[in-house]
Length: 321
Image (cartoon, rainbow, N blue to C red; front, side, top):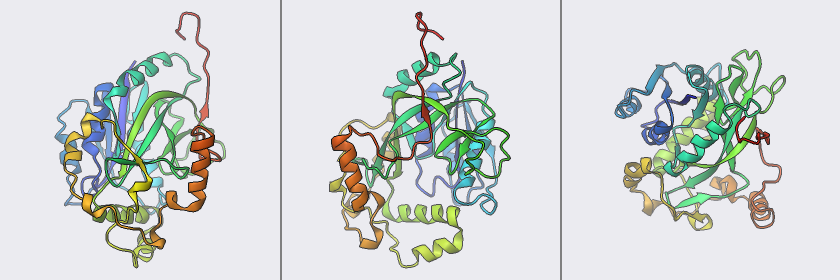
């Protein structure tokens, strides 16, 4: 059994993605790691960071982004597919450039890959998520955030990245154009495993966080729409009141140790959000839904987005498939 890791990246360094920590966090688990590396800006050092890992497992595929033909985040999915198709493993471990796996979950990941290797009904493995916000001491638990997502899939040419690369679907005879298509597709059958992805996508210096948001919006809606949306917004991202969030007291992944040590924006965090800049998890509707889910439903989401189907494979008396 072989496991491939894969991701995509473009201007990850200048937008403060911990891409090196992300890759190294799963490198011990995989036999190879494929990176679809986009056409970075001249002042970006993403390629240098990746090469500094100095591992024979890493394979870089240089790509060009086409936001005109793949708007609304679909270019993210296309780049994910490019990396995925270059993988040679039986299982494919996808990790985005702001996601990191804690080393304490290595045994659970290895065991699950072995356990379900000969069970074709299991098409993917489902991870839980911890979404950090503002700094490394706070994280969001909210109906507005996805609690789980598929991060390991089988190496099957019919399995593709979907929508804006958050998840995967089985898309037979995919034309490689519409990553949002639903007709003729189906959700993957997956099993949850006891492993959590640490998501650091909203842990950046406020000015860089706002720059990243502008870049993200332009990739979805185009440059003109981005300029219009942000013309009256501050240059510093407003994180809001972190006291309303969950406090993280556990250890972060070892791969993040050097990255976390660079944090120097604590004093700029606890600034109140203007009403216009309220975040989704701050809105009354989502706060009410979150209260019901966390206090009354043991964390089960009501009407949450779930692009997967849970399956319960039968285990033979010997414990093998």
